[in-house]
Amino acid sequence: MKKQKLKILLIGPCGTGKTSIANTLSDNGPKWKADGSFKLGPTKALRIVEFDYPDLNVNNEHITAEIELWDTSGDDQYKLTWPALRHETHGVIFVYSRNSTETNRKLEIFYNYFVTQPKLSARQCFVINHILPNNESDIEMDIVKLSPTFAKLSQIKVNLSENSLKLKNDFRVYVTSLLSTLKNHRKE
Ligand SMILES: Nc1nc2c(ncn2[C@@H]2O[C@H](COP(=O)(O)OP(=O)(O)OP(=O)(O)O)[C@@H](O)[C@H]2O)c(=O)[nH]1
Ligand SMILES: [Mg+2]
Image 1 (cartoon, rainbow, N blue to C red):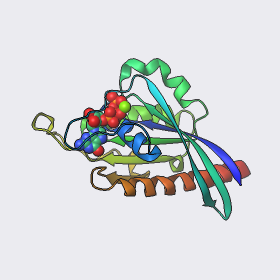
Image 2 (cartoon, rainbow, N blue to C red):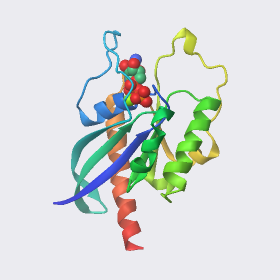
Image 3 (cartoon, rainbow, N blue to C red):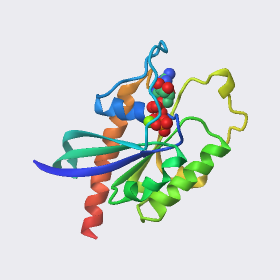
């Protein structure tokens, strides 16, 4: 069966659950605990999680996707790593948890740097709205819609504590469509 490597970035503001999502998708690494007995710490710059998706049907061709999921930190202090992050990237997944002016501002900066500048297409992107429980101090006063840039991207809303299987299924669909998009790019 044909194999294809895919470098996929997981980017978004700090504390939106990127590491939690990466660990869920790869069935690996520590998970947060619903009873609060374990919390994930902030990612230091980057971790790369590798796993395979065998036997994906991409326009009637069977392909094993060898996925490198780059679980990045949302902290601006690691901006120096950005050129390495976007180098030869096939796909970009944006993660956010609450709609706010600040979230929009950050997502726009990420989109411009990781999608517009390297000329990726909207079809190579995926947006995850990760529902995290708000605590009192966290309640957002300025709930705003995501900017029009994001309206055209494929988007899901997920609550890992209720339905992590949905995340896995939607990710599989995204990977299959990404492989198909890359195949079409090569034909052009
Ligand atoms: N209740 C709940 N908490 C979660 C969930 N996912 C993550 N958390 C907690 O939310 C916090 C942030 O999650 P992370 O996955 O570390 O967030 P991140 O986007 O990787 O953050 P950075 O690495 O700092 O950019 C951690 O304290 C987690 O334990 C979830 O699905 N439900
Ligand atoms: Mg992290």
